[in-house]
Amino acid sequence: MNELKPCPFCPDGGKPEIGYTVTYWGYCHTCGTEGPYKTTREEAIEAWNTRASLWIPANETVQEGQEAFVRVKFPGGPTVFYWATVENGVWSENFDDEIIPSGYVTHFHPIAEIPA
Ligand SMILES: [Zn+2]
Image (cartoon, rainbow, N blue to C red; front, side, top):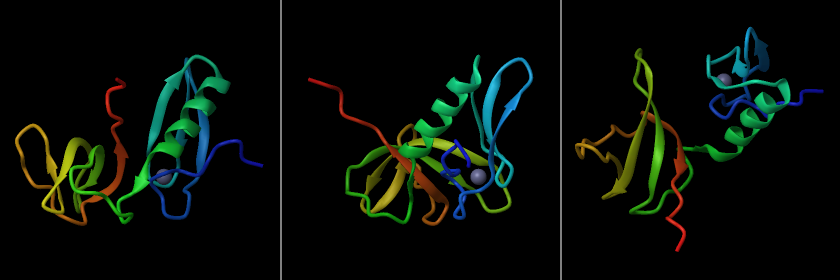
């Protein structure tokens, strides 16, 4: 039994495990996603599982104006995270309004509105 939820970034759930040196962290053997780093194994499991629940695959419907952190995988390049908003049906990076090419966004993490 695996106490870790499937890797949120691997279509097949990846191969998540807990690593340990001076701190504990979750990592995925398949895609290399790792962290967050925690002082106990239990905290590392909790942190991995919390994140796994928050990332939504990019192929799910997004609304115009949706603001989110997006995970972007450039072909043959690095995986990066941007703060972005859906404008005219495409993800647009918030700092310089640069459009993120469709298909490069793998997942998004909606940003909640500031509580009233
Ligand atoms: Zn993975």
